[in-house]
Length: 405
Image (cartoon, rainbow, N blue to C red; front, side, top):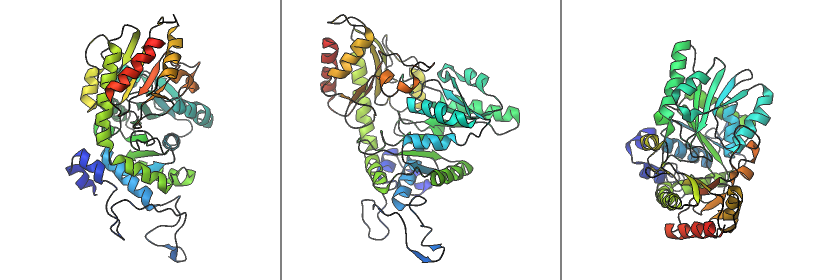
């Protein structure tokens, strides 16, 4: 599928067709899995069609890269062995002596990489409340800022960052300084391209833990970055090969297979998440509910207007904090643990974006890395990845767990 074709077609059609063209050799409708490490060459230093070694090139991986680029409306896709491997490669775009301005609500693994791996090389990370508005970002930028990095919605608090405004601030910085401005990097894992496409709002790089919504079935680990900047893509491809963090062909195949139902799954994830959020918001024993699609009532998302502008749907993630008390007069954090340990349909597990519903307590699970830092998470916060089961069953499961906690 060409860039022109993808631009002309509806997202749903692109999701089914991108990277899934019939095999050139046999006409196979399912994408072939090129499970090979190396390729026979026609002569010394003369590879067939450029294929030398599967760390450098693999046809199945190339299909995945084309597919995600098409879904995000970008020109170049670069696949990695995990979302963390994508994080590491993109972070390499900032050289020693430069800095990364980071939203102050990010995945714990991102914080861990910036602080314990990248900072010792001489690249600083500064954490800023980027959902506080464009003026906050403008004040945060310096001549050393190479990357502006954020999630939207954020993990785990589901805060939003105005992507268009952030991109405009970065562009204004470039105009005023007379030098290249910082690149805007958006982790789109929580939304997926079925919900928002950051490149359309001015971002320079968008990336995913493809393990999550893109693959959708909790059976593979991989990551993908997308950009329309040729120079950035060339550098990321070099790093992909040089650092070696590439996904295997079968993992690529699994993500490709998942992508073909992405548009259908996301519709159900979002509908269920909204129903769950509304049910939680109606309970007196719930202190806080965060869901971008919740537009009314005392738990309405404070950035619902921004969500309506840059997101097609509210997504499948919900966060909430139970009140202290309950049947056993527990603290809020103890009730959170009790709820997470007693649901039957929501599985207590890390990760998100699969067809099954998951529940976790980020402070001691996915975000343990940020404990005792300014990014520390409330130990009473519960994060839900709402799956595609029947909404009534999910609501009943959470309700029973809260009643008993």
